[in-house]
Image (cartoon, rainbow, N blue to C red; front, side, top):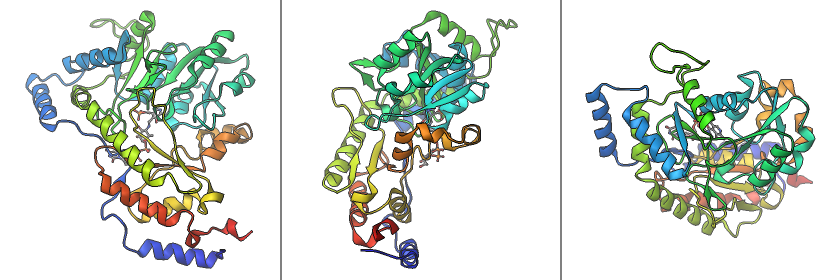
Amino acid sequence: MTLNIEQEKAQRLQSSIGIPAFKEKLHVGCPNIGNREQLMTRINNILDKRWLTNNGTYVQEFEQKIANLVGVKHCIATCNATIGLEIAIRAAGLKGEVIIPSFTFIATAHALQWQEITPVFCDIDSVTHTIDPAKIEAMITPRTTGIIGVHLWGNACNIEELSDIAKKHNLKLIFDAAHAFGCSHQGQMIGNFGELEVFSFHATKFLNSFEGGAIVTNNDELATKIRLMENFGFAGMDNVIYIGTNGKMSEVSAAMGLTSLESIDEFIETNYRNYKTYEEELCNLPGVSLFKYNNKEKCTYQYVVFEIDELSAKISRDKLIEILHDNNIMARRYFHPGCHRMEPYKSYFPHAGLLLPETEKLSTKILILPTGTSINEAQIRLICQVIKNNVFSNKNATIHDMN
Ligand code: T4K
């Protein structure tokens, strides 16, 4: 079946004026909220004590609980993961050039460039969606000082191979673990690998503290440096001994983080159930697949990553997203189009894409579907119905089908 451009436009118009499947928008990343009463009690305590930030008791308790859960020596809570990454990069001594995947949130690259360190974009493995160790050595130059792996979707990078390469070339290895709090790798909790790892507790993350993050490490010296750096370099009152910034987490964020921590089993259970419903509904559709998590590892199932092969599914990812949005299903194209196609990197390295074939391919195929505690099974089945009505359906034949 072929459609000409006019017919396709008409069809789009029709879908945009039709009645959407959902009255209200369903968002990817809609926050998980734990026990409200507990949160309000904590917030009232903060107000009663008039201690709002600067290493308050809730922040200390939150750091201790995260460290215990991860099984790591040090946890330094931060105001968000981007500042956490900036501090971590500086504390680890990264300079010059650092190798990172392009298929990540822009913060991974910006945290380097913000400090005049050049991110060098490396391709990913199309199955794991994480940096491909086999492609790293070709990117190393005399200016390279480190590698930042990103545990995308909570799925660990190939940590062993990355460690071997880092060791061989005397590079620092750190991890952007923004997606990976509560996940494990070969039975060990993420947070224990490399020189250090950085979690995000942003509202959209599995565990949220409104905004927030944490740097975790087993290295005493690094932990001391990071603590100084996140508080302007203060070592006691009136005594600055280091260059620092303001990376502190506030008490109200820690209160939310602690409250969220008390509900993580429920969050995982819900995410897992949602994932299974999507899987059951979508498993037989041609040209589509869900990103598979390793069920031998701890996993939060926070991301429902849907991959679509345009030719077999007879609909492009972007056309499907348009239809989903028309139906108030606010699926996201994380991480389209890849950092290398965003500024300032697009201008700095206009031909970077030539070395990133898997990133280029994957970023046109993926969309993320809503999950979490704000959505129920019936809603997921309806989302899947909208997908099923449009995948492998002649009414959505694209221009490519004409050939
Ligand atoms: N490294 C990686 C690999 C990351 O993914 C991230 C952040 C970072 C580092 C940096 O971490 P932080 O500095 O943020 O701690 C969102 C988040 O803001 C960002 O934290 C996250 N990754 C990224 C993947 O997603 P946007 O630009 O997509 O945000 P926005 O405003 O479009 O919201 C995302 C979705 O969540 C929408 O569907 C709306 C929904 N939402 C959002 C908020 C804030 C809600 O339903 N309620 C809310 O309160 O970046």
